[in-house]
Length: 308
Image (cartoon, rainbow, N blue to C red; front, side, top):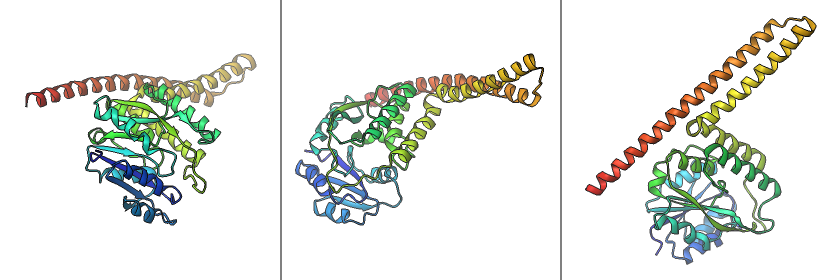
């Protein structure tokens, strides 16, 4: 029934939960369960193999690198990705795969906030998630509510259109941005997010990894929303230049004290700010033209395929 799906699970020291996770999918008819393990020392690999998973030792480090290594091994039409920490339920897999099989979407994200259990997400993580999700909607203009969810399903065709480079926890953010950038149909479905079982430790560092995710989100705006990327930099430069210019002007007119060097710095800041705004507008026009051309090429390719 589910031979067209590869269940991909990146792990690192998940012995307390991986057995139950793998067994849950095997019992539901998922014949291909692929575990990419980052060198666990607690028996994670052995437990996963005993429950029927194909275990591969990760060659690099980081969740993103593990996922990309796993994607390279997938031979099925669809791939289902989740963490091995027991917070995601195998029962929700059908809800993620159904839109793919019905042709409604090519990338489906499980929205944890639809049914999040008490204590499943620390308050600091909740705040960070809200900030990152709001930033994503503001920058990339796509109404996703949980871009950091680790439970998602996608077609291999859509995955082949993405250019993934994030090796750490920024991989989920990058995938959502790539969907917007390449016009990949994506949607969210409600899932349950469980509390971590006792004895299971998280590999996520909220401050460090949260900062990495925010930097990834901002960096990717350069090619998807250049007006925001260059405009924000230009705005900071312009405000700094105007602030310095205000001080120089005040001290000159009121106290008759000249600040030649600061005046040059202020002028440079204002000019750089204006130039960055212009670069942002021009880049935004180029991106819009590129998207229009890509849509025309895709329509032409579909017509050719239909004629054949």
